[in-house]
Image (cartoon, rainbow over all chains, first blue to last red; front, side, top):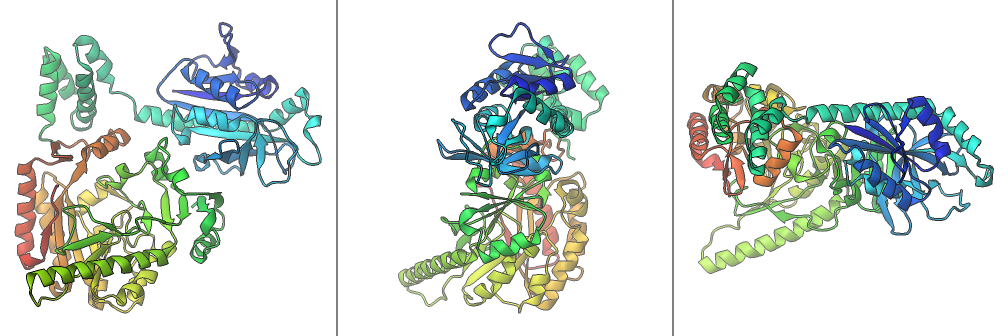
Length: 268
Length: 345
């Protein structure tokens, strides 16, 4: 299980990296990547723009690749709202291709949320009831190739509006915005991690599976059969019964036949 | 309900407005088409089922469709229509789990368009029936057309929100040759009790024995509560359907189903029964695989089923054994002409 954080700029990432005590992977040169000790939390600095965001998201998904992954995009956005306020994005729109995603925000604590439009070139249109950024749509489009919507979130902090325009944005200002919202950011990260963790445990392979595929030769089709038979065995048989079946098996075929027979007449 | 999506084109629709008013604290998000949310593949049905969102939409095409082969209660012409997609209940055998990528509830608010489509279907069905009679040169009466409303959802479970019954019963009252089946596991019968009884409506209650229901029909009212609701409706004069579909096998199957039937027929007047249907638990093969992936540790799905045609189901021997037990028990209470078998196509 791995939660990936995708952030466009080093100044947006800095305080989060410090707070989470992430270490830089010095062997990585394509992107700056930071991670915790067991690489269950990884952070990538993507650079500006939706294409960079999509490439970085794909890159981090392949980095320390595991089956169950989650993704969070964190960054600043413009919008007709108070500077420094944090929103989740509940609608992501790309005006170039006229497509929309609807992130599933209802699996997190009740944070305020807004629509978000991802644009290519920054502008000063602060009037519409939506946030504006340059990465989220690209990030989401890539992330959704690796997981389901419940494990992808977009967090944006308002950095500029019609009275305090983007010309005022500086590295230190962005760092301060992140500091101000760090508790809520960490809460979203922790909740996402927890949800992912539960799903990973739920879908974990039977503890017998790895041992058995090392002991006997199974074709791909037989491996699928074995995985399901072991799931069923763990529901209906006790540990002693399963161990006896395994102990008495002398081939992959005999194991599958015995499991099939023993489970063939068990009704819940 | 924390999250509601509403299609732009119907956000001002009075029915959409009335539903939105019931969820004042919900986050409301506008969308162009419900499919943008509902049809996306990358969704976790199991997690969504725990926290579904509501989608208010307009159904534009295919408002009334013929039912699949093997689905019916004795009529020649069977159709279904769905004002709602997905169910508030969480029954582990339900095909809706494998049918859609999303567990969110879609409510189509354009009821009048459904009613127009039903009228058109009925008109075609009458013509077809007349043609058949002319060909056979008989003086028999025109066949009724059956309309099933509980195919993609429970017909009554979301009534307090959708007001489906409130809107459709007066409509069907005007078309006696159209039989409406409301299929349900709900005890939401207030709307029915308030309406005058119409003879062309069957309220069909689905049952499994209490022990099975508790294990596999999550969030569903208890069997005793459903029986009580059913009796209340029967006493008021409503025609009742009994649905033992799916039949689910257990070690003490005979005893479980005999007890269930004894409880049902304790008070229910036989003359109020329109039809009884039975069918084995079955899943289309692809759907079954999807369900196993969703719920790998579920006991019901871990039972020994086998592939028959395009379905995963009980062995023929087991199916026949179950059917025989239930049919024999039913024969103690009612005429076999009322019983219909749903079969695997």
